[in-house]
Image 1 (cartoon, rainbow, N blue to C red):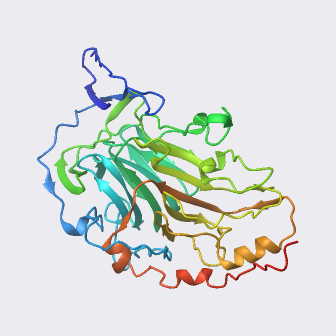
Image 2 (cartoon, rainbow, N blue to C red):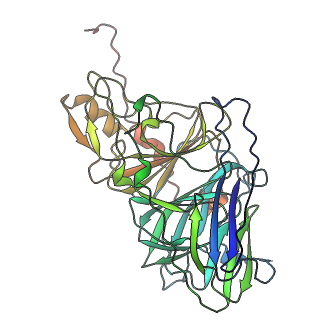
Length: 419
């Protein structure tokens, strides 16, 4: 149960009693959590004019209709998405939202969507909130100055920010900005279960940061844009929504610096499953899978013995969407560019390109640093994702020659040479 309570500063003490029913099998399904925050604000958020449907020109390319495009089983890659120039048009964060792919239905709170944002101006007297789910924002180019009801957050490339369901925010940019968004409907992001890793690996809870209350008492016509059941609506109020004097609780926006991630790596043989690089996970109700994982591939030592060090050529039961924040991804150094993306669907084979294979199999076996100056990430999900018309047709960034990166792989089997 997630609650954000608006309180007048003069309000009397309010007591809230919640009866929680425990799941029948706590070893298989995470117990329900009571997350809530109390906001002490100058005016309650209910003071606004009626909502109206937002005009088409103001909604970017947000799309949740997964039935328009035919499924595509091929490996897909997008070149870096174009950022609009101010000479052509002024586009803010909301107007610059573009849906790439997704699955499920926000009506029943099950599924995910993956977006990019492509913008060049700040949101002016405008706030946004998502009634359908949570946003995990991954900046790739440009600093985001995010004003929330809970305070201000500065989020730079190589950091992430999570804005949870229902939280109002406004984004100021300092120039052309581009990034990725993972939206989840099912649940909320949390730290993964570390199991045998123990207490000191991966992302540490102490490194996540939440804002300090910072209010503005400003009377002006302010637009509040809400996303509900995949559609955008707008209402107008006569004051800033960021008039929260103080807050307390555990249902808050937060950010994390990816440089703080503690890598767990193999020191013997075989390439480890990417789950050891999980920063945050959104649990599903199917044991052993997630609605979504946010995974990174940061700079690290590679010290496996007697094995093929890069990722295996593989097919699996998860859909993998990859993006690149900076640098050159070690499995596809020449062809995967920062600001672009790849999509490998459930049970579609994929893996390192020919150059990576030849280099890794002929290189001298020794401990080595990999991914220095690089930050690649993956949105991994148990859902089978469908592309939108914008990502498949309109953006003109789909790389039709992606399959060629594997064409040079050759047969090395020789029955007469089994040394």
